[in-house]
Image (cartoon, rainbow, N blue to C red; front, side):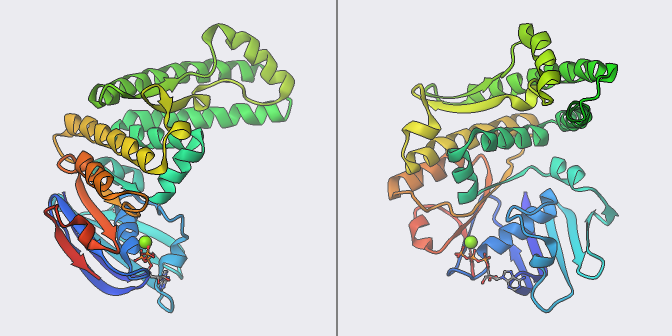
Length: 327
Ligand SMILES: Nc1ncnc2c1ncn2[C@@H]1O[C@H](COP(=O)(O)OP(=O)(O)OP(=O)(O)O)[C@@H](O)[C@H]1O
Ligand SMILES: [Mg+2]
C-alpha cells in the first residue's frame, strides 16, 4: 500500500506532504494546482522514470538547485534525489542505493492518463509497449530475457545494416529465435491469465507476426534488404469486444470503459500472484466519461487497486467513499 509522499522543490511545490487512503484518495484542485505533479513524483520514485517524459532538470522547482522526494510504500522508504549541479538522479530504498528496475518490481504501480489511452487508440505499438511493461513488472525474468533479446537484436541489426556477410549473423539468428520462443511462451500464458479474468465479450488477442516455417526465407530476405523482418518485437496485442477492435469501432467513452475492464483484469492477475492490490494513479480520468460510465469505470478498478485520482471537480465522485486532498 502507498502510504505517503513528501516532496521538496518539486515542480510547483516547495515542501509538501500527502497521506493516502488504503482504498481511494482524490486529489482535488484547479488547473495548475499541482495534481499531476504529485502523481509524477510518486511514479518517479517508485518506477524510477517520468510519465510526463520531462527531463529531471525541468522537474526541479524554478530557481532551486535540487528536488528531493520520499515515498512510503508498505512501510518502506523510497527516496529520490536529483541535483541540477550533478545532473544525476539517485534512488534509495530503506537507505540503500538501488536501480529503478529493482524498485518497480517490488512495488507494482501503474498510471493511467489521457496520454496512454490516446496512444493506445492511435497505434498498436503503444498497446504492445503497455503489455510489455506490465509483463516486465509481473515477471522479473521476462524483463531480463527481453533486455537480452533487445541486445541481441541490436547486434544483428548492426551487422545487417553494415552488410557484413558473416557467420555471426546466423548465430544471432539462432539466439534471437530461441529467445523469441521463450518470450512468446510467457506472453501467451500472461494473455491467457488476463483473458480468464475478462468478461466473455472482451478479450486480448496476441498475434505472432512471423511464422516459424517462414523463418529461413525471412532470414534470407533480411540479408538482401539489410533490415530485421523476424522476432517477437514485431508481434502485437489487440483488444476486442464483441469481435470488434477497440481502436476502430467504439466511441471514446466506450474505449475507456473497455480499457478499464482490461486494467481490472491486470490487477486481478497481480493480486493472484502477490495477494496485494497494486496501486493505480488516475490522471485525466473523468474526461470523456458521462456520469454512469464514470461510475462503471471506477467500480471496475476499485477494490482491486489502491487508487489515487486527480480531478478538478470532486462532486463527480460523491457516491464513492474516499479521502480527500484539497490543493
Ligand atoms: N519546474 C517547475 N517549477 C515551478 N513550477 C512548475 C515547474 N514545472 C511545472 N510547474 C508548474 O506547476 C503547476 C502544476 O502543474 P500540474 O501539471 O501538476 O497541474 P495540474 O493540477 O495537474 O493541472 P491540470 O488540472 O491543468 O492538469 C503548473 O502551473 C506548472 O506550470
Ligand atoms: Mg494535470
